[in-house]
Image (tube, rainbow, N blue to C red; front, side):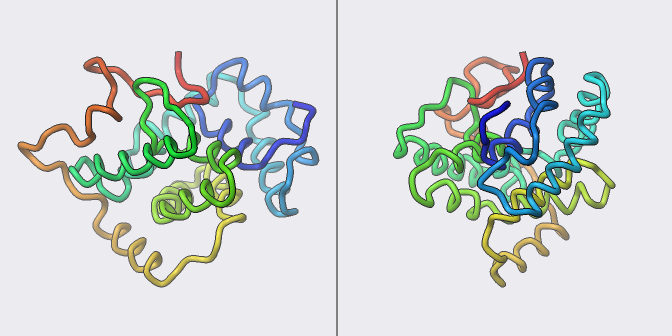
Length: 218
């Protein structure tokens, strides 16, 4: 990567499952070529990339799975942090999908619209403040994931510092909701409900894993 790249785009790629070509490209990123970015964003990305380069592919994959796949509190699907597997989550997913649709962004079949790397890429491409506003509406989830990663001593937590650096300060309402969710966790799955998301935002085949628009596991 020799051209200047937005810091949220870099974070978006780093938060995807490590595939060989993606890892090779990210290892060549020079923080000095990331922009527009603050000094703290470049420094934080530089520190994380130093760790990223020190890991081989198997180590990166194991770390990713341990941090994001085996602990639902760290799920990169942001509406889960707020709603769990409830009907409210399905409505929240549909609202996000409508934001993408209004911006002429079409999701591939099987993609859930609340996947953080997808939302970060949208923030770098969307006109005006649409992308940033969408992220801010899910600020509580971002803060909860970050806090959980910090508690577990995860190196991935620093990527959430890069995201937060360009976001507005937390409102009192957001702080109170974060505290409540941290104490109570997301709502439990409601027995006897229909699937938590409407058909238009769910995978088409049983057992199919949703993949992000900008990458995913093969």
